[in-house]
Image 1 (cartoon, one colour):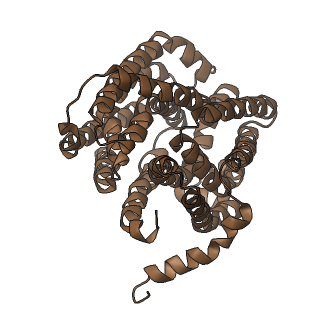
Image 2 (cartoon, rainbow, N blue to C red):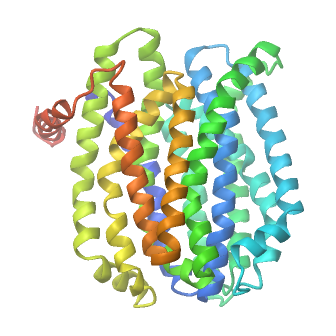
Length: 441
C-alpha cells in the first residue's frame, strides 16, 4: 500500500471525513448560537443516544461486512446477513429506548431543565430507520474503496442538513431541538435515496441467506459488538455524567467545547476507512513489513498534520470559543484546552484499533475496551462530583492516554512498531509533500 498510488482515494477520503468538520462549523453558526441552552443540551442528549446505538449496530452488522466483503468476490451472502442483522438490531433498540424512555429522561435531566426531552425520544426510531440503508451502503462501498461514492452520499446528508437549517433559520422556524431533529430526518432520507442509486451495481449480486455467512458474521461481530459497546459507553459516558451531575445547561457548554473533537473523529475515520481492509489483506498475505511501514507512516503523517490543531486549541481556547459562539460558551475554555491533547493521542489509537479489527483480534479489542470503560468510569466517579465538567474532561483524556499506551504495547507483540520508527518517518512525510507539489518529482 504505497501512499503515492492512493493519493487520489486519500484526498476523496479526507474530503469525505472533512464533511463532519464543515457540518460542525455550520452547526455552530446556525444552531448552537441560536437555540436556548436547555434545548441545545436536550439535542446533545438525543444525539448521544443515537450515535451510541448506531455505533453498536455498526460493530455488530456493518463492520463485519466491510471485513468479509473485502476478502472475497462472492459477497452476496454477507450482504444479506448484514442487512438482516442490522434491521433486527435497530428494531430491538427502538423498542427498548421507547420502553425505558421515562427512566432515561429522569437520569439525563434530573433537574427538569429540558421539558422537551421526553418528546424527543419518540423521534429516535425515525432516525434509525432513515439512516439504515445509508449506513449499510457506506460499509459496503468501503470494502472496495469506492470512496468517491461514499463522499457524495455523505455530502448530500451533511451539506443537505446545513442548507435545511439555514433555510429554517431564515424563515424563523428554527427554535427547538425538535426542529433540528426533523431536518436531520429529512436529510438522512435524501442521502438514503442517493445511496440506493449508487449501490445498484454492488447490490446486483445474489442475496442468498446462508448459515455459514451468518455464522462468520456473528463470530466476528459478537466480540466486535461487545468491544464497541465498552468503547462507545466510555466515549459517550462523559455526556451522561455531565448531564446527570451538572445539568442540561452545563452539558450545553460541554457539548459546545466537544464539537471540536469532530476533527479527531475525522482523522480516526479516515484511518479506519483504509487501514481496516488493508490490514485484513496484508495479514492474509503475512506481509508484516508492509503493515509496519504503513502504520509508522500513518501515525507520523497524522501527528504532523494535527500538531497545529493541538497548539491552537491549547494556546487559544477562549479566543476560539468567543469567536465561534459570540461569548455564549466562553466558560468552556478550560474544557477545550484539556481536549486539545486528544489531537496527539488519536493518531496512535486509530491506527492500532484499525489493525486489531482488520486482523481479527477482536477479543483483544474487547478486553481493552472493558478496561477502558472501567478506568473511565472510575475517573468520572472520582473527578466529576468534585470538579464538574472539567473533571469529566480530565478523566476522558487520561483514560484515552492509558488505553492507547496499552494498545500500542499489545500491537508490538506481533508487529515491530517503534516510537523511534514513527518519528523517523518525518523525512518520508517531507519527501511525500515535495513530490505532491506541482513541478516536483
